[in-house]
Length: 353
Image: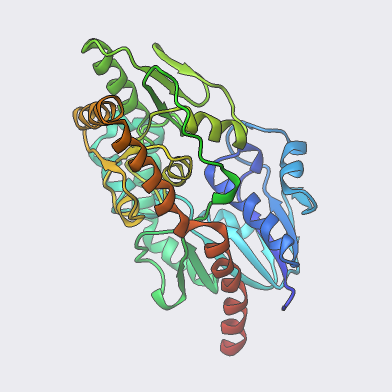
């Protein structure tokens, strides 16, 4: 096996523990476990911290983590969570792979939706989307400094398709044992950031509609609650998986994604999912339900409730099919492809040199 010196770089602190941060931590840990010399770097930027620096290091295990304004590395290859222009503060001498983990880089998804719904999106996201729309030509030029790009799913027109790696995110299916025990009260879970593009406002509207219709369902969310929606606070991975397993349906109304790991997590825990029919969700090809509007989500939840209550065998079969279908995203199938991307990128760079 060829041992590589790999730098995993983030434009924001991993203490924010976003979906991208979780992926970088897991990827670095697995690359190190496979014998590579891995170091993780991050700029001390970003939103409020969710976890501490010591917790980030604990999660990375033996992989060193440096959070500094001056990132310099002589690694053979760097995997950089791409943020336009900001990444240039990370001085790397080897080959570079741009990790495309923000939906803001997918204008046909996020930008169009935001510009069409400025009041719902809010000032911050509207400005971001508008900025990205105007900066796309410059971003295309900025990306020319990379040797390859990685996107989990979807289409990315700004990049040379011959050097674009479409490798989905993975999940360790064996880590989560199926649990058929559900509470007696029908439970609906929202797991994700409480932002417009992740569908938080839709979930709040759906819960309110069902309450007004007289349904006594339990509504849960990660983080802080709101109204009749009970918040579960910050959850570790094990606690999150436990929350999935003790829910009857997971609602994921995200209108912009580069993948949608929540869907995989819920499916691995054998929990039905209702999500939006955007390209990356449909491309996962899992037996989930799709909804566009709050009314559609209400109908899908009531449909799931009906199956659970009146046809328990059918509900259990659905849950089992989710678990079986998600195995194609198991870490043992996907990670070797991700690891090979590093060697292939280096080989390609050497050929061009």
